[in-house]
Length: 227
Ligand code: DX5
Ligand code: ZN
Image (cartoon, rainbow, N blue to C red; front, side, top):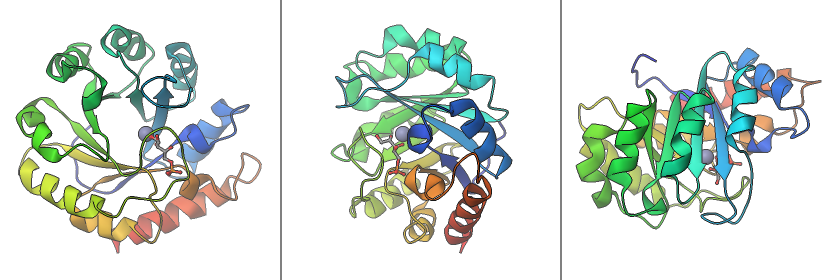
């Protein structure tokens, strides 16, 4: 994974066909996805349940590129090794998930993965400042985590701009997660984002039987982001 600020589209498989994940992962990568975003939820930190490490290990065999695992779980530390062994390239943990995010980020890098720090809409970027030298990705949640298909929270733009300034020359990605559309992608990238997670926007209207729809959705989103 070489660092670049070029726009990366990361479809969230939360919007894929749950009975067909292998084919869905292959389809979105064939259709131009840069990263595959896997939303792990525990029914405790967030009010929804999704994938365990065994699921991620199974997905891995269908993903050629970057597997981006977003852990919305608390506690998180005791599960990091299992997700690393499942083949995650990036593991993001939430700042709000426990009292020792510094230790969590150290552990993620120690397992050989890129370390992601996710922050909820209610968390300010001040808390990120002293962690910037130990993260590879900051995941700015632009909806309250738990569900796909929500509307992006407007105050996120200013937050992303301020975070971008705070990051400076550091090789740290800004990932936007939640409510990304063709309408707001350009403004998000202008504010400093380089990874756009998109569930509904990529998967809408498509299927493994009609994967070219994913291709045109990804193309349109990338064009909007780069405009
Ligand atoms: C929300 C997840 C997001 C979400 C994105 O908890 O972290 O990745 O699924 O979905 P859309 O793009 O539909 O908002
Ligand atoms: Zn996510």
